[in-house]
Length: 514
Image (cartoon, rainbow, N blue to C red):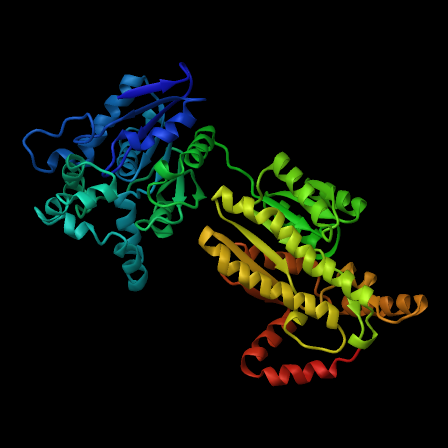
């Protein structure tokens, strides 16, 4: 047993898995011992610990392993915060059921409770494909259960090097599989506060493994790390931060950044996220409107012109320095010019492209790399439009930019999904927002501008589809794998028609005159 850190501080006990030793926690300990009293030890048959006498696997039953863990807690003077990885997590589940009074919290990493998993399989027996996907992640266990088979594999130096493990730990650790897997363990209720760290690139553990605990744990939270199975070794700082948050009982608010949030869809979306408990950062070119929205949602307001690359980078750096890296970024700011191509001036084209296309590019460039570097996933939402895939003669400039950001979102999805960052292009149809009051009508006199804006606003209001309905769709798509999401009936109808009769869509677009 190794102890260290801040004497008298909160005790945290780390339990390693197979085929590791307590050294797998080295990087995590360096971070945690700045604040906590950290304890780790080698489980039976690993590192400096003796293997059970007499050979065989019965000495590795979870009940025996829990006895060792309880003895460690007793030596520390408990109660303690418990952290387990892989088989260390399985031991943790058994321990918090057997001796809940010894544990203040339990952080589980890549190690589901066997009883919870068996219960999940039983509840999903009518979904054989889903069950097969989950159980298929543990294909190697069948070989582990065959006497002598795995022991031969462990003789190969290349295998041991790949697993970064010694032959002793590999051979002895087989006892945990042989003594416990397939023994029909019963699930039990867990009263201790539990936090699961989901490793999204873990080849052995799916989300369903974690969800199996939900009916059995009274207080369960979960966070994500974009890392593989041995994240304690490969991402120690990140794992340590999540452990510290779990020990502190902190549930970090989702941080959402929205451009063009001073009004319309952006304002409604800010309110919707705030209602869900998110921390919202409001960005808008109109400082007064930004502050109004921020006051409404209890958020933070910043003025920025998204068309200005340097200004966008400066504000993004300030936002991340003050509030952290966002979980959701919505590039929503936009303007519209109505009128045929021949009547739309070069100045109008540049203004629409600067805001609707370059503004989206500047926003995403300012935040996306930091989201990737953080390695906790996230979501980028781009506000496109039904006219992004509906060719027409009335909105060539606006439609072109919305088609461009629609393609940009799909390209980003292809690039960023492997980092756990989802990208969505939101495609509304006619929505009742203040955008109609700011329309520019190409070639119109000032008086004609005002009259046409009034008529456009009246038409939008008769449509009756408010921005709050679009905001509700944004909340639904944050955890949705779809990339292109039409909103409103007409947007969905045109999206479908483009799949089955694109010529008809073009013909309809020709009927829509400026």
